[in-house]
Image 1: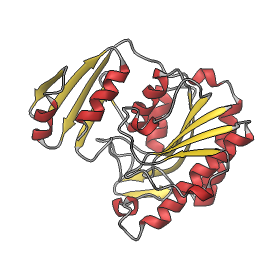
Image 2: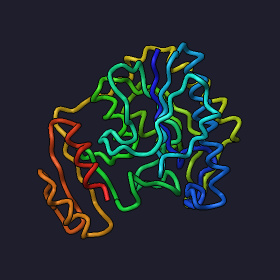
Image 3: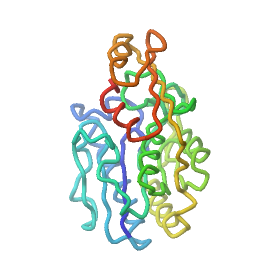
Length: 266
């Protein structure tokens, strides 16, 4: 069994301040350790379920956050950014049995976390087919493109609730919830235990119930904080500027949507 894990940092337990997610800040070291621990727990759960090969994409910031030596030997770790449109799902293909998302967070424009955002901090909202889109949705549709079920998610409570509406069979572990500019988080060791157990159970269940429903057409709307970014995006083939801050893109093929993101997410 070959398993894919995509990992972010703003949705690990305790994540509250932007400084904690920045590699140049002293507070970052502790959160990096917890991100690594939660990813390692997901790997252990996958191994307990019978996985023989695990690929992990470090998908936060500069993408070299996870401490490699603290992961199981069966793991292949993808670090940094290649420029491939799959981005947070780089190296995923149809040979994988299932995909997992660890440490993901609420979307831009929501109040699920003090760290809520989508892709960058330069968007006030992001929609796919009129639905406000978190990064989890972008990654899940990428998995759907290569017909890989997305079976497990850990992160903040608001994202977990939203994601289960999107993929009804999805298993989730909420490690914290946002309250205004604060978070209420479970203990780091408890988060690790729940993630390990949750991943094992999710992979032992019928993963086909977690196939991502792929629309026949995609309409994407992005509202930039800076009006100049919307103007610049309007020159990408197929993009319309529908407002001073807003660009829209239409495509039947989701890979074209990912290509659009690669060049127009400022």
